[in-house]
Image (cartoon, rainbow, N blue to C red; front, side):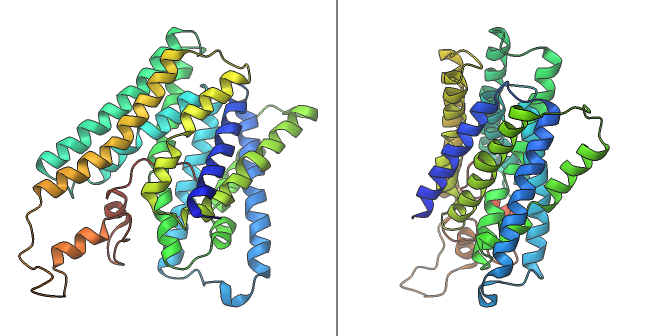
Length: 349
């Protein structure tokens, strides 16, 4: 199965689970869901990785270990923040904010690498994408789909933090794939910090003593395994076979699909204006890298070296390869520079 098809399947499963959880998840249930989903992922794929042939496993040392530690931190912030936001605000709003803040986050990461018109374009379009996502919040508040302004602000803030950390996950995964770290190894090791933090909250946090039980507990566990853990592994395989730009384009369907599922499930009514705002914000978000990429080509002077003159690429050309989705960066480049190339907002992966 092709990488892009795997990504599409995983994204559809994520949208389905998000829609079912919209306005249907408490704070304690979000922590239980996170602990179940990510401990199951780590356990199952840890065993799979252990029993695979030794020749297929790359040792996690040096650059591989560093990237894995960073991926652990980004994963914990993304998922714990996102699922906690689902207990406060509707899932379509959480996904719209998480995705909409991606271009602005990458523009801020790149602020020292870009200059002049390009910097203004990145920041301006990023702010426009986020503003449209926030307009979704305003619309949902005006039609009574959020409980209070305080809860709305808290949920949007958590979704925004999750979106900022999610901006680097696809790039980190793609880089690990280039270093020959298998999807099984990545899935076995990337969730340790996430489930340990969730377990700490369950044991020592201020959680209700009764918690979810019976059919409700079974529902949370089922969504955690089938709607989170399984799609994550499928998505991990797909991302390591697919350039980050393709992944982000496919991920653009998540907020819209989430809204349709949540409306169909009966947890919230369908509002055409909200649906349009969600999708317009995503259109702007994904136009950002296209527009900025063309602007960079228009303002970058041509190299004096041509293929007819020399077979050796110039330093400027080599640097441009290093920031593209098709040609990953050189070993010495920072991940921030890679993330700020032609990649759009990243999915939760």
